[in-house]
Amino acid sequence: MSDFEPIDFTSIDDIPGINAKALFSSELSKTEFRETGDISPVPIGDKHRYMPWGADDQLPYDILELIERDETLSTCQMFNAEICYGSGLLYNTEACSEKVKEEIDSFFVGNNIPTNYLGVCQDFKYFAFCVNVIILNGDGSKIIRLIRKEACYCRLGVADSNGRIDKLYYANWRKAKPMEDQVEIIDLLDLNAPLCDLMVRMGRMPGDDGETRMRTDTRKFAVLTKVPTPDNTYYPIPYYASLFRGRWYNIKRLIGLAKEAKLKNSAPIKYHIEISDKYWTGIFRAEGITDRAKQQARVVEEKKKILEFLTGVENSGKAWFSQVYTNPNGDVVHDVVINKIETDKEGGDWASDIIEAVNMICFTMRVHSNLVGSVPGKAQTNNSGSDKRELYTIAQALQKPYHDLLFTVHNLVIRFNEWKGAYPDCPFIMLTTLDEKNDAKTVTANTPEI
Image 1 (cartoon, helix red, strand yellow):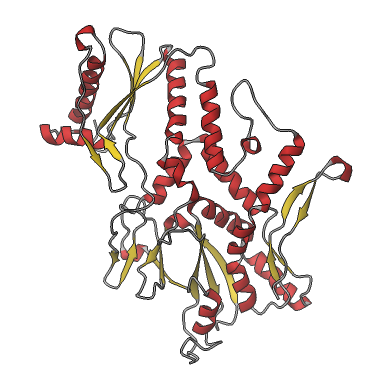
Image 2: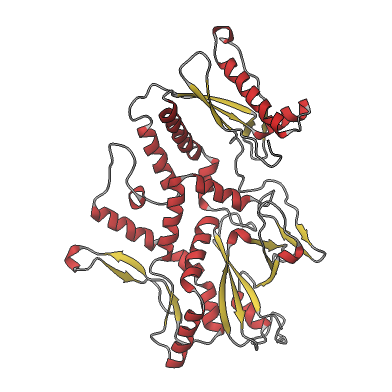
């Protein structure tokens, strides 16, 4: 076995003596969105420090992996992003002069606004914040570029005594901390007043001290837009975090694994055995096993011991002892958990359970299951066309607060560039009834600022 080949902890094994199988997995650990302990800043070179996202700085990538593992969850996330996108972003220029209209048209042509807007919509739905970078022209009089920075690759600098964060760090933080020359360091505008901060930096208005500064030489600034949350942290906690802290995410995945095993092996899954990675690490350390091939062999041997413990008359009444500990959240974490699976269902195994699991995930993601596909199972309760049309309209109407937040950077661009009469808008698509002789029409809830 190669030193770089991962050890396989997940498998489906025959249980000796009976026509059944056991599913081994190593998914006992939970993704912790809220850190209970203090997280220390991480240095970048000699002058900069940033706050890691999660204890190991891998939380956004853990979130992406969890979402990508589940078909329902990933579809709901994309649906939410598409709903937020609506008919796309535009600048309403009806009250603008021809000169301003030409400048705005050039700005949209010079920047890939549809890609930018769909990207920040996804960042908002995945991570509850997004980052845009504005680039000014040479003399600092106009904003000419608008660039989205993927949220999962952004890290925030350390806040000062007033809670102000003035730096944003953009790099590939996956698996390892990048070197200083691999990190893009960007000045971050004040989260609470980005336009005023930019105007002060560019010498257009006085600062809090009443003094007007000299225009800075910096021509690139980051604008951070966060969804306000009850617990204000460096990185917001998405509303769907409860899905991973509860049980339904794991229940749905277990049903899929069990059905797959039965189809492949014709024998039902009788036990689901969850083993923490720390359990295997402890065995390797206690027995001094460092070779990868020997570690894999020891995993197989330990699985056989567990299976032999589960079967046989001589094992009846025996107890299994497993180490447990309580994490800072008060949750009890086991090294080994053996779950017995009911196997008396035939034909449409777990049909009602998968419906319930899908509905729970859709409920948590605030997406009606009929809007992203038929409810699985034989007895489907799909809504009528009128009900679906109303659900779709409600879903889009609920994007108003997110649009207001996403418009922050665009209001900044319009005001700084002095495009009088213009304002950002994102009309949504309203499905119509047959009597209107049209499939859909666009509607806007946005009004120009006074």
